[in-house]
Image 1 (cartoon, protein in one colour):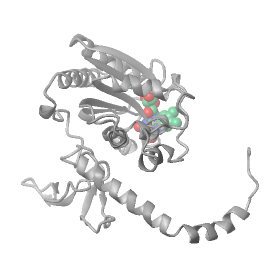
Image 2: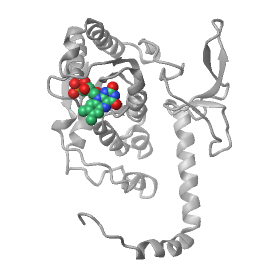
Image 3: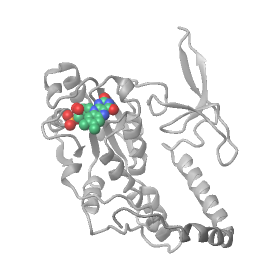
Amino acid sequence: MKIMGINCGRPGGNTEILLKEALMACEEQGAEVVWLNLHDAKINPCTGCEACMMQVEVKKQPPKCIFSGKDDMDAIMEEMASSDGLIISIPSFTVGPHGLWKVFTDRWLPYEWALQIKAGIVDKAPERVAGIIATGGATLNWQTMTLAGLSVPMFMQSFKVVDMMMGRRMASPGHVSIVPKYLEQARKLGQNVAEACQMDYADVKYVGEEQGWCPVCHNNLMIKSEPHWDGLTYKYECAMCGAGGDFELDENGDLKFIVAPNGLEHCRLFNEGRANHLEELGQIHGEFFKHIGEVKEAMGKYKAYNPRRMFK
Ligand SMILES: Cc1cc2nc3c(=O)[nH]c(=O)nc-3n(C[C@H](O)[C@H](O)[C@H](O)COP(=O)(O)O)c2cc1C
């Protein structure tokens, strides 16, 4: 059993300490662990060229990023692909995850299992588990988008999230080393990930603390919906996984989110929901190519306009 730990905090910082606590617990369960601080790696930001998708969709070739061989992403994703579990520990910056997490995970598209399956490289996605640690200097109200932002890309690498935790009011490096509550939570999270790695995948469930509204992904961010591309409309939906439904009052008079009978049709955590989105993308691209002549004409105005550029 191999468990990969990914961090992007300061050396000796709070996220590093919590990740070390979690990984020590994994090692006690017999896991081999590997450590990556994203600051140590060269990761070019995705340019949005869509070459990886077009290779699969149009050329019917395996997805390959234009940066393949030019930075450290292939090596990182190979290490991740050969891991049974993943634990990430990422600081909150400006109310969400540290930007390096976004730069890193935006590059996951060419390595996404759905694309690999479509390209015929593998038959099915691997069955793997993950734990998520977030830490910030403030209470939840200055970290509202962190756990959801850390959870979102997990489906792209087919990780089932089994535990999440958030350290609060931990601003200075090392502060968390004297807060037993968080150290214990991180240790438990490590144990949960290691145990889940050894279970039958069908039995792997979320066993962490409830973080909020969504009974599907356990995150705490809800939005008022608008109609989806295929007309499906929910009243509210989870900003992280897309489960749709409505709120009801429970027996204590508290609001409770109830997933609609068709509430998982667009849920990103399941193959059906992701297939639905692929259909949506196909429709959007089809619409674009239908109007390609008009687009070329309309683009003239913007190509001709060249404001003074900084740096280039
Ligand atoms: C630029 C910057 C922005 C930050 N924004 C937030 C924030 O919005 N919410 C929060 O709770 N903490 C915020 N913090 C505090 C960090 O999350 C906190 O110091 C954390 O412990 C850093 O992780 P580390 O100790 O592993 O480096 C911010 C820190 C920096 C440097």
